[in-house]
Length: 64
Image 1 (cartoon, rainbow, N blue to C red):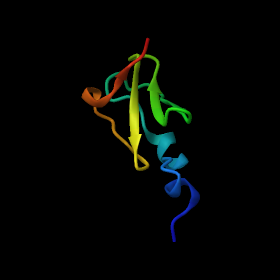
Image 2: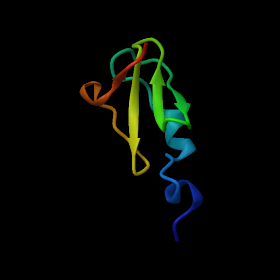
Image 3: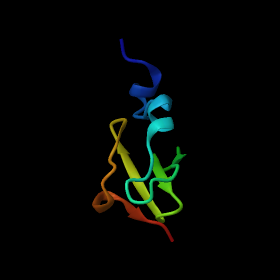
């Protein structure tokens, strides 16, 4: 059975607690509006596609 987080493409909250920025090793925050994980220290936003965080700096969006 598929739960609500998978249906909406959101990552599992328990997974989010474990993930850190691959460059700075700092905590990430979840931006639900953009469906991204944000590293303020690296000034990058990592996309989440189909509920899977893409933790590659080359795939990340630079923050303004």
